[in-house]
Length: 144
Length: 366
Ligand SMILES: [Zn+2]
Image (cartoon, rainbow over all chains, first blue to last red; front, side, top):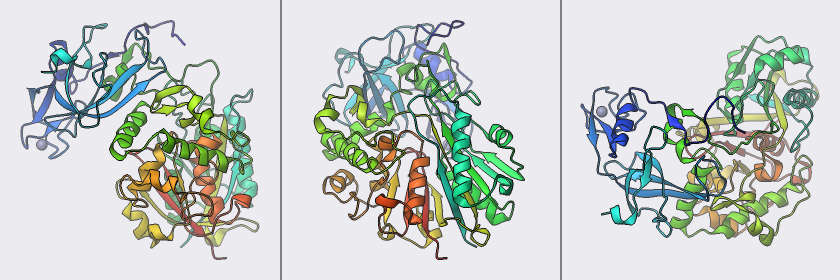
């Protein structure tokens, strides 16, 4: 059901906070950025206000490789996402730098079609939709 | 001090209804009071968990959710204490009621959970203009709908352990056969062949239509008290253990029981693959062993560990774990009728792989 007062014809637009802004700023440049704890060196999930390990709150923003392992994958046959037709291939990608951090991305090129859990992936970001670029599994030519 | 569930009640369960959520809630509450042998005026405590779980829910009080405030006002309750648990499960409701009863805060706690399918809404949508908090990393990918995260986990499990759609069907099939003995179940007269199952349209691979529980309008409720306060005509089952998923061992240390003592298990099955999670997770089966356990018939009625003997959510409808709790109660109190298995410790688990809780119920020796 469409809500008359808002534009729901495009992908939902993230509303960043201080914690998540480095991620989206990086995404706008097409790079994967997370924060690393300045005290113990643990990588922080985008939403985390403090380091889950030492509970410190001093982070350094770091550009990651985009390398990841395929943790989960599903093909959604409903049409939950405005602006997308046909089945959606959604992947859970465990980051190479810390596989405890799992990001969600779309595979829009079918590269994970026959992949198994643990398969190597590269994550990047798609074109601007609305005012954001969203995580995607890079197509074969960019898998490097 | 022993804490008991003294009675349980269910509304009818319907796919759609002209009646509102409050009508279902009060039907269930009155049935629970009658079953426990108490009156409305005896109730001085309340615990609920009103959250509507569908992605597109309007979260409307008295619409598709009903909280303590509305229930107590519509029933004319005079509560000394009560609480609604945000995004928690019926198993947590039991633990919370047990705490209040042990503390002496109240004598008779009404527990209630109602679900409702509001007409005219697309529940399976991620459409929204802006997304906040955790949603910003999930909703723009459609990950919050159709059980995508459970499907993704099922995919990995199946790939790692060689399970197939036949193994998913084994769960759905067991649910449908068990539901045949549950008069409340939405699918009670609907056996499902593998061919039927396989013809069901895909929702989120590997889950097809019949791997998903059906959203329904319905409510179930219970009454809990200290065992010494059990009313004449009440039907007790003892609450002997509870724990959160991160410390499942607390369930066994609190109850003095072990997996080997279990007579029945009601494991949450909003999606079929979810029952593998805690068969493996609690060590009932070795890692990856759950599909074989089902395939070999160990989860059948009368077998080693009868599972979801009321048909599960897949057979009864999506009461978000209330049906599981009710069945564990009926099994532990020896009142499951034609579904009755050996009486003894009855396990109930409600919630997903990364956020569940457990309750153990046992026969009261009165
Ligand atoms: Zn740290």
